Length: 156
Image (spheres, rainbow, N blue to C red):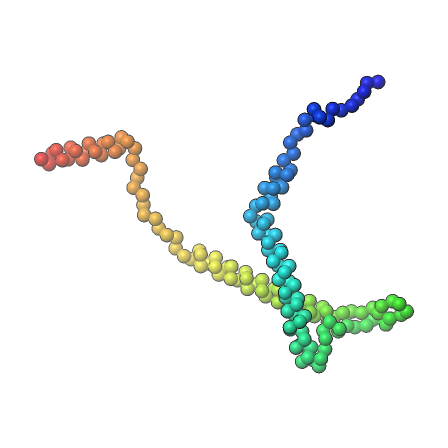
C-alpha cells in the first residue's frame, strides 16, 4: 500500500475573503455609529435608573407615608425552613416602569429634534450656482476670433 501522506506545505488553499468582508462590514459608518449608540444608550440607562431610584422614588415614597418602593411586595408564601419566601415584587416593577417612561420620553425628544433639524435642512433653499459659460473647443474659439476680426475689418 502506498504512503498516502498529504503535502500541506505545497497545497494551495483558496483565498478566504471572509476577513476582508468582515472588515468592510465592521468599518462601515452605520455599524460604527450603531455601536457608539448602544454604548451611550447603556450608559444613559444607568443614569436614568439612578435618577429614578435615588431622586424620584424617595420623595414619592415620602409622600405616600415613607414607603420604599423597592420593598413593596406581595408575599405569596412565607419562609419555610431555609427556603426564602415566594414574593411578587411590584414595587421594583413600578420603578422599572418609571425608568422606561423616562428613557422613552428622552428618546422621543431626541427623535423630535432630529426630525425638526431635517425639516429645516429640507426647507432651506439650495444655493443657486451661476450658470457656467459653455465649454468651447479649439475650433469654436478660433472661429469666434476670426468672426471678431472680420467685424473689425468691415467696420473700418
